[in-house]
Image (cartoon, rainbow, N blue to C red; front, side, top):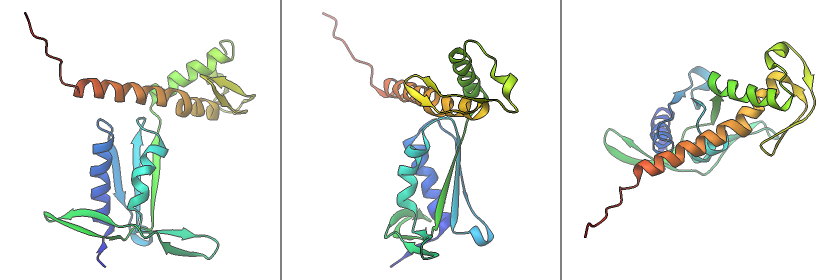
Length: 184
């Protein structure tokens, strides 16, 4: 059985993410030191963490079993290109952390929805505190929490999915060939 080094898995993962989510900038980094078998993936806005983890999960060669305090093989194999040659093997990756950042523009749109739901209240007045009850935004229940957390939940549950769906639709329309019509 061949083993695929973490750096080659990271390079392949970045390529797959770029192919799956065109237009989204991903930072894919291999860990160092005791974390050298780990990969971190960062991006802003774009697809959900769940969507990204659909691609990262098969790239992981082992996972931590907290019950037995050890790493166990996932049985996954991955095919990567190393020096122009396709190689298939077990990835030497113990874990892949995903980190989705939320842009200021998205936070602002979420804060506007929060404000609308709170009869025009200004969320910035509660930036250092302010616990509020449940909200319903676009059919999503935003549970009682601090203002900052509620705004972030609105961004993740309401704003980003709408924006990502619109971006995918626009990309699909751009990719469709222009229909040709015959003039008679």
